[in-house]
Image 1: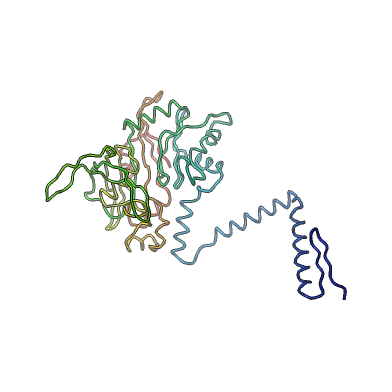
Image 2 (image 1 turned 90 degrees about the vertical axis):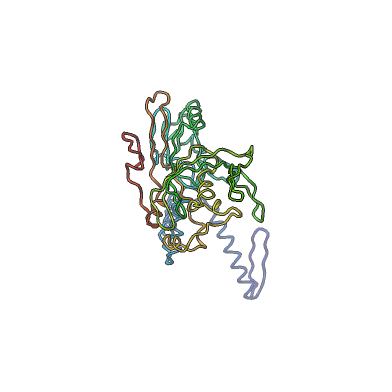
Length: 377
């Protein structure tokens, strides 16, 4: 029997047995598939392929895990990561749908969870990056980029103010710096603050945490300490910042609470530090400040885990439950009245409130009996 032969660029194969025949078939298929892939696709073929891929992705999304814990994890991931890996145009479009208020000077958006305001190492997408696109969507292709007036942490949701002109942005930044803007946040805490309302007035300082996970954290720098039952004044550090937070418990159970926070000052991570280290009630989902010595998923009680439908090993998926609920801007420029901006909580926050058996405050209480002001619906 004549030996099979295959001639291809760079290859000569001859043989008489089955193994070489199989090798011949394999190489032939490879060259055929390569040649096919190199052919340009028609518009119809490309459209059909894209439709098939979209349908496949849709089917994957519809698959619901049988395990209830896995279902809960999938739910949390869907709520909190849906805008973190999208095209800038998609994010800008989503921000337009969440606009709370706009006029000729400012635009107020509902900041989504998990999106940093500024870029940095490892940041794929940030709010600042899409401001030129957002401006064009609102005012046409000749619109100048919007400007940031303040910032929120990556994990914080809620009211965020942007300005059309740089001068207006500087004026609003000055209002924040001089503490003329009323800011109110909602948070779900692990454990219940005692007393149910009060003021935390403890300076904050950034310190180095040594150990296996070397990192830096903000922490308390109290001006007094107890010494043999007596109150002793501690010399203040020049690096410490004055930090004052007013708080009020709206609703509580034995193991959790819904709390309104009003920061009088604006120090980095102030609310998280005052709640965790000052009141011993860390915010749910705060995996950084729940433990001073390490960076690890938050330790939760069996009761909270049961209500959330999670196991401790999956606690790392719980998002930070801190929401910028309300901003009150004083009269500025052509606007002669103060502006009360209110934003509803995100879906994952509202669902956690229900799961934990907490209650949302009434509209009158949450809006401080102010009427005639814009509110996000």
